[in-house]
Length: 394
Figure 1: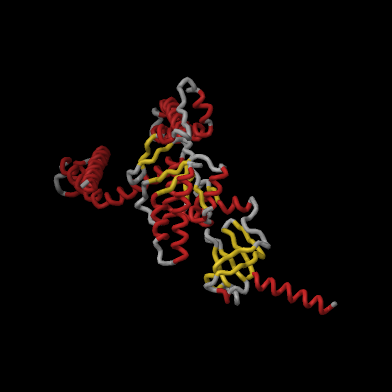
Figure 2: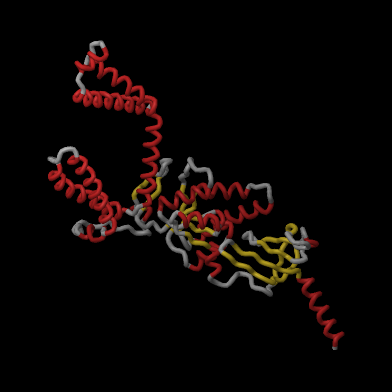
């Protein structure tokens, strides 16, 4: 209904434009001479009617393209304005007003110049308006300092839920938002990882942990998976969240909204971070890079682990279950509870069994951690063989 109404309005606007252009042509054209050339009596009234009909038909067919262009422009402006700080918007707005006022003073000097006078006035307005915008954004602190008598709104991270303004997202679900919300948005990978619970206990994280509802849905699907490993990881993630919420070291909130126009969970997470202007807490390498490209701050657990001692050190023993074959001959693969891969040299014959292994190497990168180990029995045998060889040489 609304779409048809807008299309009708655009059609009428094009028809009105046709009448206006016809009136301009009538001023420069001689209707009497045109009637003699065509051999018919050309009526001024009928020229208006024909122009209105022709331009209305053109406007009717071009209306859908106009609506698509307008909606695209609105979405582009919305994305830009959403990411622009409030003080930048205020400074730019005041700068544009100042530029247009100055251009208005100069336009009077050009108005009497024939032909180029009106064009010069328009160009000058656009130029000074743009200059005012740039100066207003870059010197916003000085401009806002002139209005220091107006009390500034103070936002506090702790009372965000009480004093935050309600901002509606595209789907109408509200989120409390202040200039500094203090949210840390959790990703599925960092919840399943489990180390987030230990980090919270140390007190290194402050503010509020925000868990989007679509992340909880993904965790639930993983916990209901037919694959045993995935199911255990999903249930571990849900247990970790419950543990953090119950221990009360940090506040945990659930974001109930969703972005129905986006299919991928990672893309929804990026959109939410852009709206809130808060960091994403993750250990997903690809999500980390995509978020950084869009100017989103990322707190990567793996990068934090790079800066401290790894959890497992070479020479330590671990009791694990060998799950499957490795890429190289004779290798077996096991996993820690957080999903860290353990490559066991000579572990192929222990597939499906629990065995004790000794860590030989630990590789830690921004993409994750990988542990290399050997079964303890093989290491002990190798040591005994080495001792026998030494005795024989002696």
